[in-house]
Image 1 (cartoon, rainbow, N blue to C red):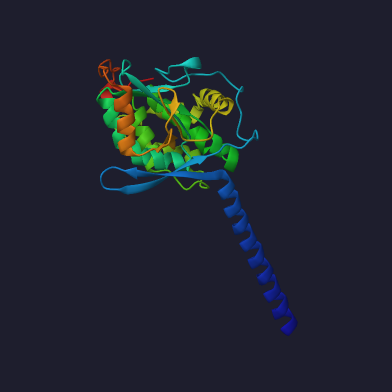
Image 2: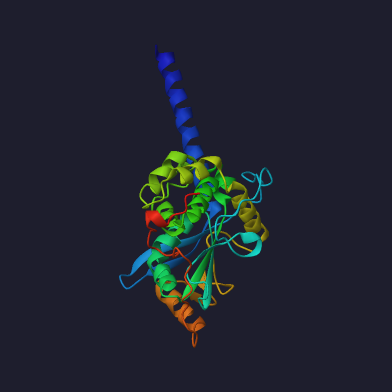
Length: 288
């Protein structure tokens, strides 16, 4: 009896030590993956958001490009049509954003800067070009980055990229939770966007219609001279986490755009349906 109790206690102790070591290893891995580089002060309320870069590893895990046709979403622009545009096509400045829907730092940036970016695009001050990456799938395993990016491209087909993009970041799961790999979770979020949750959208998501386009975008990210996600460029100049010696903040973002646009007229050529923060009316969404 005594020997059995000792053996049992020894096993519990070994399991505890093993569990503690695993937790320490997870913490070390996370520190290596995540580089905290700045603190952005948000608006006049002084709400602080930690801004970071999630660095891509050098492995090939999660890369599956080349297994099917590349189908760019409706209205995609730029080299190889790898960017989803938002805002007036003739806006005087361009904000280029490389993001991963599983990336915590991307969610921190988007949730902090969302209203300001919408104001700048809706007023014709900037247009935004979104490029989608899947580095968290490569770093952590899983397919949520790819699946969410494909769904966002499907939403672009339906004229609802912006509200669905925002919904993904508002509802981003913890980094290790690959919830976006489940189509049902994406359909739940789509149901909150008027006119989006249609048979055409569900089919596009389920079939992975734009998977190879996402993979090609991720290849472009990996081939670029980028430190990680989010990467944010104003007219080609990096502004995240800093622009020169100035750290990014909501006020600085507005200031930098104003400086870039000095003497220039706001854009007025908005696509139809408008690629803005306002959800499209169901009747305006294409059926396919």
